[in-house]
Image 1: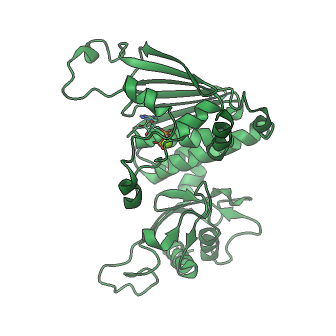
Image 2: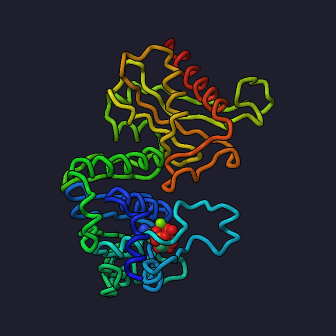
Image 3: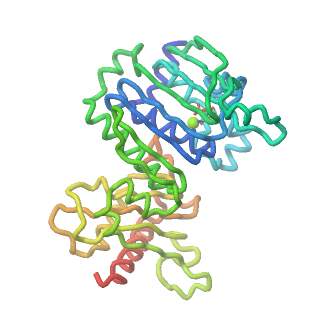
Length: 352
Ligand code: ADP
Ligand code: MG
């Protein structure tokens, strides 16, 4: 049973970045306005994610680390209806707990009916809970004084699965993966203040003010932010926009930012594309962006792009890849043409 658990864990938790991804998704699902991620040694020594979300009461946090428990769906009907939250399998905390030392400190938001005792103690009384799990066993559930919200600490990842631990790469590589994950959530959620710290040093912190441009400024810096050009493309309702994205076309909407053709890097990793709100690494979308620059990029140089593409849910297969970073469009060439057209229009509007 323990072996089964540890094997299953590998599908969710491959490396520190996968822990970070699951924890940040939970914080977003918990309606957090602020999420702080801190990792040590690329996450191989420790991962801590703190949020100011809805928190959990004692019973909920006990349940949260059990197998296949989720508060996010209510049976098969919900599954078929499609879920709005990011996680719904109810296995992340359980599987992380099986391959690491896990500590959760959490306190639920006061409900309107609760009395004022919380406020008189500055919101830090002991009505929080600390729960500890080691290698799949709950080793403690205790009252804890903590602010409203949740802190999840993961230490000694894979301490009990040495074979998996051997697959971890260098600290620098593992941190790159963590940075990529947190960056994409920060860009996709500009209304949430998201920060990343590595070995005690701040890497970036978004302000959560809601604008994509301000998130780009926090993540990529001023030079890149100032070079960014708005992409906005919505088919008109009356269908007078005869291009690819009119009613019933391959895309509903494209919006985001792309950089001036002179603000580039030597890697494609700054081409960030999101389909229906989810980060994806999709060659069709990347090619569409590059095509729009129409030969204006210097050899082997790639622009920055943060593009949100909305397509009808039934025209995209998100199950191509288990971790859902790869997708397949029904109408690949239609999507490609529409996205390239949107980006080219934005560049043309700037005289480029
Ligand atoms: P899932 O996200 O698929 O439901 P998880 O194992 O990631 O499964 O989480 C289990 C449950 O724990 C969630 O359904 C949620 O109720 C609770 N939970 C996890 N993280 C948080 C958090 N940061 N804030 C509030 N509740 C949380
Ligand atoms: Mg989850």
